Amino acid sequence: MGIHALIGLLHQTHSDDQLIFQIGIKQKSYQIFCDVRHFFADLIKEKTARNPNY
Image (cartoon, rainbow, N blue to C red):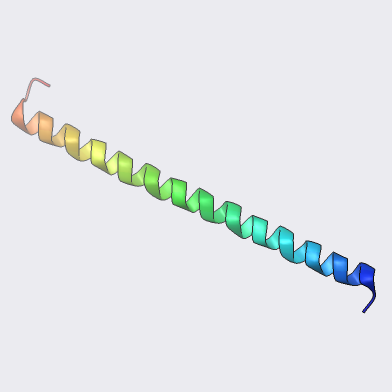
């Protein structure tokens, strides 16, 4: 295997890792977003249950 092929292979692996990393971050932030949304939805439900005029 030539040095150029080796560098190409390393570069390919690196970009795949970055892609996986970015997808992971997107999923994680989406998960946090959903948790926060649920939290606020529960909070509002709680407030409206206690105070119907809210």
